Amino acid sequence: MAETEKITINMNVVDLGQVDLLVEQGFYSNRTDFIKTAIRNQITSHSKVIEKVITDKAYLIGVTYYDRKTLEQVAENNKVLDIKVVGMLVLKEDIDVELVRKTIKSIQVFGVFKASPELKKALNQ
Image (cartoon, rainbow, N blue to C red; front, side, top):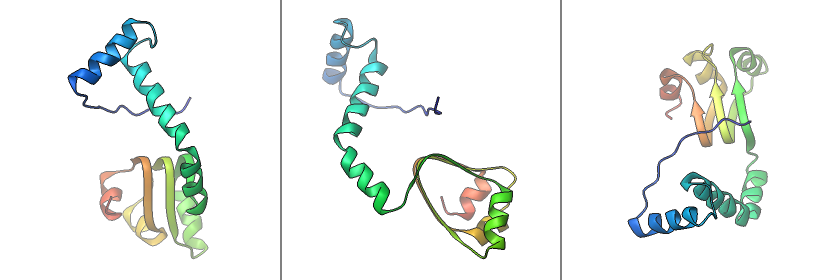
């Protein structure tokens, strides 16, 4: 199962009351079930736009990991990465700032970006 990330939303009291009413009537098991269903429905309704952007801009989808070995190979090949991810990007703890500056030109993440504070600072994230 994919990793999850907790979010917090603010709702006005009338909307929240309507959600609670639908839960009480058995349409949803709880507030979270309602919110997840609403989010999935919106993602589905905009799926063509999402797919087009992902294809046109060459985004990686899912959980993407980079470790020291991978970035050292990038450096050996004299390449610099423009990383674009929809999901989660993880820069492993074995990567140092110098290697990041040498191998990563830019990072754009729609979702979650996990890296040490030093690496995030070096990448201005």
